[in-house]
Image 1 (cartoon, one colour):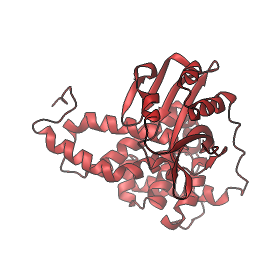
Image 2 (tube, rainbow, N blue to C red):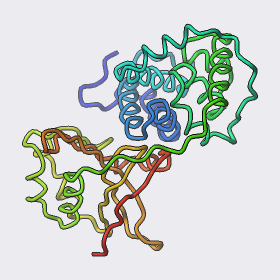
Image 3 (cartoon, one colour):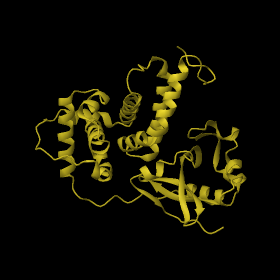
Length: 303
């Protein structure tokens, strides 16, 4: 059955669509947390989740509704993560490592209580081991469930868990790498945004720049009311330069009872001394708590 062109459910598609909405309302933060750690970036993880949910929506007419929806969504998100890593060139490394012996010393399960520590280190593993360790030791899935999600066997999952845990246990305790420098263009973008200098901002942006406001808009920035929406906000807000999982980004802060609180992240894509794409994650409140490394490098001046 085709999905209606206007995106609204009709007929027998309606029940599946409502189940889909209800499930992702509660599952979305967990999906993002998983994808963020699979990709190694809270920002990339959100992009992958959105791709996965769009793919799942398109596949709703063929979804077997006698089976639970959550594992199905996790499997789609997992496959999108593998696609992302393959595009980034990680898959070849994973395939090489997969040829190594499955015989390793037994390692006790790290367990969900150490989830955040595991998430911080897990990007050192190849994709299959990374997925199995995350799904077992962070999300507490059963071996059978993991095998279905990663398209493997229980034996294969056990081997990947053993290898992954052994590698994590042997990782050297090295200090975290220093964050990269914030580009002068990003700092200038923040400065003009805080001055509400919209004409000055447009001078920094290419004429054909793309804008993505997660869950709201995707298209040309010039065709959107993006700046006027910020200008019209009733709450006190400021922008600051910062880092999210090691990537320089713009951080939107809101003034509340305790001071300036980070509420959203904006990613800029820069090429040839111009901003060529803006990704605004204002409507993704789960993104900042999911980031392993988060820092606002330049506190905003008082207005």
